[in-house]
Image 1: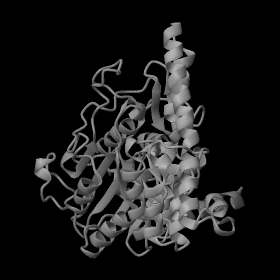
Image 2: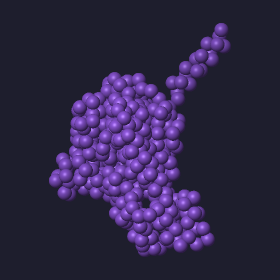
Image 3: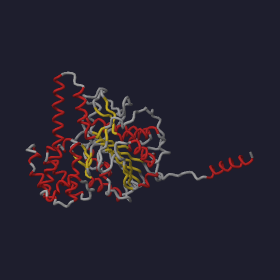
Image 4: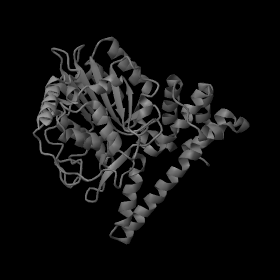
Length: 442
């Protein structure tokens, strides 16, 4: 009995003597800023604005003031004619309205664009009052910045509707921000196909930036929560997983590392990745998403992995559902025709890309097949940016200016051409000479 008492006393004494875990914190006088962006438009992309609106609720519920949050989204979903609940957006089946109370700073197709995004993020307000509220992330050397971006993507690019933000331009802006001491720490959550390619081998570890991405450089991200009433998907797997975790956790006790591992484990559709300064992961999530404990209701949600589909297949899945559920023969034939057109369009993409690669390489020693079958890491961002922009403008059959996500995944072939040191002028010429870019013979 005496020995048991001594052991118990030792355990209690040890517990009191252990040092309290001190997580790195916001510097004195520092603020937390949040930039939340959904780059897409159109009912089929419902999920992107739903994710961004949910993110707004998370950071507001955890105490980040409205004046320290900037929101960019086209805002064509809540009051869309296809919305069965006008003025409301949900991010999970039978979930709460996440649109209510969201203060949108930049909306419309002409304002939710890469140029405005980079200006807002870097604190450059010049000319922005004509495009929205004019508000920017006005952060300084003691501040933390949280950036959440949601849209389509491809190798080395993320989309803003018909326009692209290239990894080259994102890295240059982040470098300028780091040099100008626009933040103490910056945390970036990116939801897009092949989102890892925006940071892999490009984001230095000494910039005080940590990026978490929905997928590695080669994978799709996945849409989830099909809604039969709305005939679209309500969320994206990576986004839904971090948002639902932040809804229910005490963020002052959960580290970013823990949230990363939770998201990574629960996202079994793609490989969630982290890049940059991984020491930031030792900080608590509250240092970037808000320090107050949320009092908002937490709603039970189904597993987002069930029924999830690659983001580039969402349009196809919507058409399949509309065909299956058509009430009249005329409607069935209408959707069958659209399905056949979509299928042919998809089949044409690799054919067109292969023809351009053939022409650019003269297919010497089977070089074209090799470049279609392999994936190089992106380093030559100058060549790649020029080629992609030229391709988007001069090969309309690929639909790169039409939010055609299926075509974006095939841009890896142009990464390969640039990394194989094929002259940029040769690649551009091959694009210009390819008749199938304009609907010619395949």
